[in-house]
Amino acid sequence: MALGEQQSIKKSLIIIGLLFSVFGFVTWLSSVLIPYLKLACELNNSQAYLVAFALYISYFVMALPGGWILKKTGFKKGISLGLMVMALGSLLFIPAALSRTYPLFLTGLFVQGAGLSVLQTASNPYVTILGPRNTAAKRISIMGICNGVAGIIAPIILGSVILNDTDAISQNIGKLDPVAKAVALNELAHRVVLPYIIMAIVLVILALLVQYSGLPEVEEEEEAAEDTAPAANKNSIFQFPHLIIGAFTLFLYVGVEVISGNTIIDYGSYQGIPMVTAKFFTSMTLTAMLIGYLIGIIAMPKFLSQEKALQYSALTGIVFLLCALFTTGYLSVLFIALLGLANALMWPAIWPLAISNLGRFTKLGSSILIMSICGGALLPLAYGHFADVSNPQKAYWIVAPCYLMILYYSLRGYKIRTQ
Image: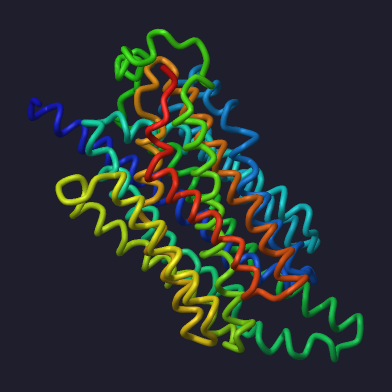
């Protein structure tokens, strides 16, 4: 590979890494928004986890349209458009906060998710194709570090602003008369206005930077040139069972990841830990995930194949889950946080295994995998339901069959092919 080409690839990866930082920052803000809106809008668990639903269901709705948009606009313009859409979603938080209207908050989250889905549809296959296939997991792990670092910072920043003194507010809110209660909750709701104005401004600036950057376009022909022989006699995406099973596995993985990151603050509160401490627990989960990404960069593929990484990750997740279920207090919370370590290498391993040998179906396959991100919408809702009817700790049992399915895919599912 020529020096100029290497420098171009490195520059492209830096730009994509910046975008993955945006993914992480915006996505993991939801972990703070769940307990915040639960109090400000007086919600139960099932209603509060609609925050995750609104953000992640947009991936299902927008993945295929996102692919069509990218085909029409090209890579750079599509990414700029996605960032602008995210800025619009951020601005919707202003009237939502001023009126303390929960459906409007959810609308803003959905619009943000729509912009994210366009960015994800473009960025993930780009990282996979930008280099040898067998090192794709390593490149995605590097992107995961960008995502994780931003995700660690986001809950700390927003939590410090909007969750300050919420323990006292929660304890005293029932003692107030209706007028004083409304004033207190309105003041709490207004705390998100300034952070989301700043976020919208930053997203617009990033959109302009990408638009005028030297980021090269990824031509459709380049994608189709990869692995064309196995796909030559195929006429439908459904003739790739390893992709379909992989999409379902990715659906479960994203659900598990969102549950482990977005429920841990509330779970800490359930275990009797003050919110002033619990608000940092999502950052613990993401720190554990960041450690997992670093392991992936060092170990894959030299010491650890993508398949083995997925096997070990699923087994580790099962062990940590059982430990969390049968302990209490800070120790139980710690094991939920350690699910981040178990989850870290799942996306980098599942994505290239599922997308391999698709040939001219690569873009469609990528869109289907992006649609699978809606697991982050549906599984947390199921968790919230079980938390309401039983308790937040027992509700984690929903994660167990997900890890078992991920283990199956790592052992056999990715090998299934239609001749």
